[in-house]
Every structure is written in C-alpha cells, then in structure tokens.
Amino acid sequence: MQKSLRAKLIGMGVSRETLDRLSTFAEVFTKWSSAINLVAPSTLSELWERHILDSAQLMTIQSKPGIWVDLGSGGGFPGVVTAIFLAEFGEGHVHLVESNNKKAAFLRAALAATGGRGSVHAVRIETAPDLIGSCDFLSARALAELDLLLDYAHPWALRNTDLVCYLHKGRDYLGEVEKSRRRWCYDLVKHTSIVEPDSVVLEIRRLQKNS
Image (cartoon, one colour):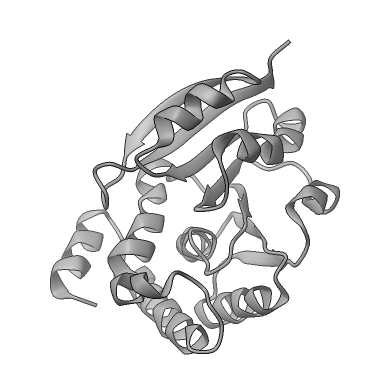
C-alpha cells in the first residue's frame, strides 16, 4: 500500500488494526484473482484506490454497525470491506449474496482470513430474501441499473421501513435516477465519491413503489 493512501485511510479514521485486515484482504484477493476474474483486469493495478478505498468510504457515510445485505458481492466490494470494519466494532453482520460458486468460495476465504463479520449466500439475488430476514442497510456496487437494484431491495424495504440503501454509481447516475422515478418513490441523498469526482454513492431511504 502506498504511504499516501495509508495516510488517507488513517485520515478517514481507519485504525491500524483495520488497515492490517484490509492488507490481508488485498493479499487474499491478489492470490485468488490469478485464478478467477474478480474485477476487470485493467483495474487490478489500482486495487487499493479503485476498489478498497471506494468501498471503505461507505463507513464515512454510515458509521453505525448494523445488519447489512450486500448484493452481487463478487470480488468483495464493498461487502468484505464493510465486514472488516464491523470486526473492529465487534458487532453487526454482512450477508454477502453471490450466485457464482467460485466467487462465493473466495468471499468465504476472505472473511476467514480477515475475521470479517459476515456470511456468504451462494444464491441468486431474487431468492435471497427467502433466506435473509430484515436488515438495516443494503449495498451494491457495479451490479445493475438503479431501477433493477430497487427491485432487488424492495423485499427488504417492505420488512423494514427504515432500510437505507447505499448504491455506488458512475457518471450516468442522473439518467438512472430519472428512469427509476417512473416506478419508485424514495428519498435521495447523493454523496460525491472520494475516489472519482464524477461518481457517487446514492443513499436511498423510504423506498416504495409508485401507486
């Protein structure tokens, strides 16, 4: 890890213990990514800033421990990173949903190596609500258009009217928001990404279908 990036994480309030856990995760990730495709190969050289830091910023937005559902967890972003932060809190849990069995095996290995507070569900997202009860927070990164993500989130929103969704989106997010408003009503806060100025984390509350 570059000294400047380490300093940035410490400046965000990340403890040295959590930094060590994140470094362990990076080692596990690098080992597994040589065998299976966890992220776009062109971004591997930017693992810390492009993926780990981008995921860690969630903890600067929502620092309270709770029960999370992370959809399409894939390479562990942001799900494993969130689970690592929860390990420092000593409470909370992340349900990582990933239907690809090889990626699910990687996620289990990453949680075991880092002590992250999470569990892996190797199922399709559509069936996950049958296995995972109510949650406080829901996250997804580089998974699908906002309209579809809200379809995925809706079963949990019905169970918990205080559900908060944190969805990483790129520069085209405004078009996705406009499209989603045709079917959905929700409160929205846009957090500018600390990694990519054109990207955001969308914070969505009070999700309901339009009548």
